Image (cartoon, rainbow, N blue to C red; front, top):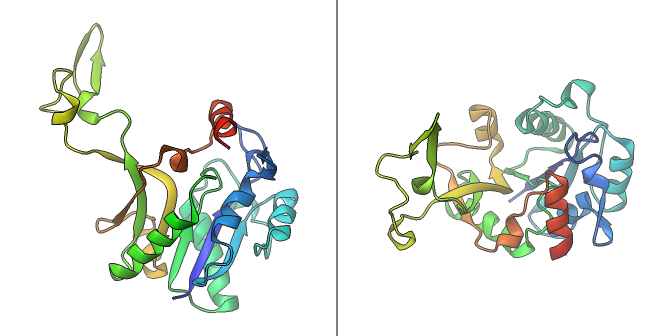
Length: 225
């Protein structure tokens, strides 16, 4: 299997400026995601898409492929990860040949482990190349959530409510952003990393699913690194 690992790393960030090159436990945040898949036999390349020269240089020194700086129209606050991934995939397959899968690793999830990445790859292979997306147990169960209307509250979900015991709640999961893997044809067809037949990669370790997007998130990550 030939897998293109793809890491989007835009230079700008409003909530946490320069987060992708900010140093966490001795190395830039971006490098954590490069190192977790470096050396895996199925990975043909680790392509970093960035619009920032400093980010590009850090990525290259860490062994990633940075063939260009991202076009300005793909470096705005509103551009989607899907659009950036399709741009990178189109270039890669034209220049270096077809791939069987795109593995999206967001740099804001530094603590995912190599074992988790390998489990995700095996799930992709086992389930006939269906999309794989990582999930973890929901910290706030939807059946305990409420809607607020003026000075009244009611359960968010039919059948929900605060009277329910935790042991009586069905398992609920959320997408955590640590791992996405999809065949190129599915990414192009769905125009998304999500699909109705995607396979869950369950991650139970809370540390692995930390997603750094704010200064508060960063402080949590520092305390755990």
